[in-house]
Length: 361
Image (cartoon, rainbow, N blue to C red; front, side, top):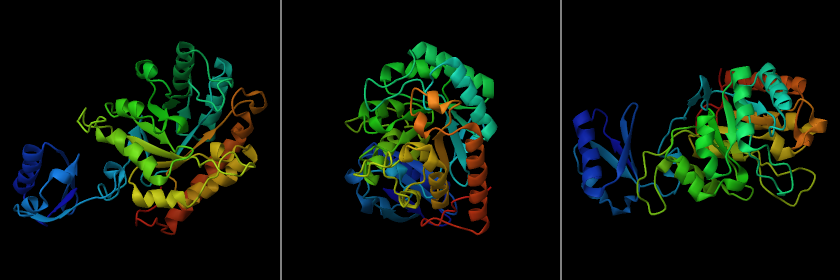
């Protein structure tokens, strides 16, 4: 539910509305102040008597939101969300590059790949310890302690914030102790509710990958669940985690020449419906380094807030997804060209369907 206050409504009038919602109905409110004040109500709002709220002094109108993903919706939060990670802004009019190896294999490979990512102009470093693979017989990463030790060394070597994928709730505390800046939830875990619920108790940024078979509603509902701070029974377990970053990577289809089917039209559609930062993954969506660069340009032109892609110091010897990993000079060219494309679109005033500018320096 959204409550629009009148132009010129006083802070006391806004506080009275919030007090009525919290006291009478036990629900939480979030206030957004711009030209006018908007109050977003979280929780099971069907118990609210709209007319009683509409009659309070200073209230202009009461609007019910029918979508389940209220917290992730532009209807609830019209302005773009920008998340700061170690001095790097993700979302809004920024273009942010996440790059690095698909998985940590050895310390030398990880550090070499990390240096390539930094030299290429990436902003956030991929440092994946755990890997959820198509087959359990495929390479799934090093032992947890050793992997996190190398991830910390990658961060220290480059001075870049790191993102790492969490697939086991038992490893969460170890990730936080190791200084992981962003926790990624992979496509196979995108609807694992216990994991999403635990992350809702934190304020650590989360990258939520698009599930293999998720439609838009399912994906945004998963994001909103992390943000809600509610448990399975709808009870509050905290304020919720507002630091959610979406990452699109396509879906399974009948096509076998590419790894996944990436629908470019999803990018402006998601930007129109959600205020959350939106990355796109040209590596996993295409599965072939010969396609990665062109797909990346398409994602950026469509309005992505950034890219996440694989860089490896020696792809031919990679234990994980070497076919889709780019070399350092290829990554540098892609980063340079996508930033130029991004700036060009901003200069001509290109906007998404939501009237929010896609890109600007």
